[in-house]
Image (cartoon, rainbow, N blue to C red; front, side, top):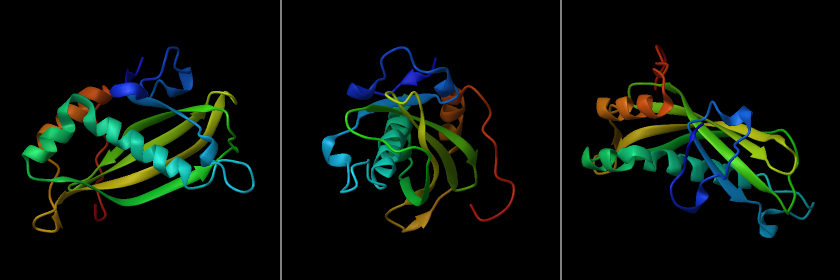
Length: 166
């Protein structure tokens, strides 16, 4: 069973089997105001849900404080979202997150959104985060200690990006 996120975003049991591959899963309500004029959840909302899941992931096992201690923090470099099904109020969604691959200064995360009322995935996507030195204004190598913590959380060795600028 994946670990739940801190605070009030912890998903109640049971988490659908389709989400067991994601070490952090948070549950969020679909708000009335998440809908657009067409009457379905606006295309920007899953991107916000991805952000909430990234934050919950980085709060796990002291990752955020380890980054701060190293004088760096994450900065979002790219995000993508594939919309699979329309969502409507009322509903709640489970957002799963895991690291897809790790580079020298960045890591790519995979996100999925599971609709409780549909009993199916409604969106998925990726985000690329760069470990960034905000004072110097430039990327920094991912601290080895952070990789070790993420691998413990994920329960696996994280795939390394072997080529390209990451």
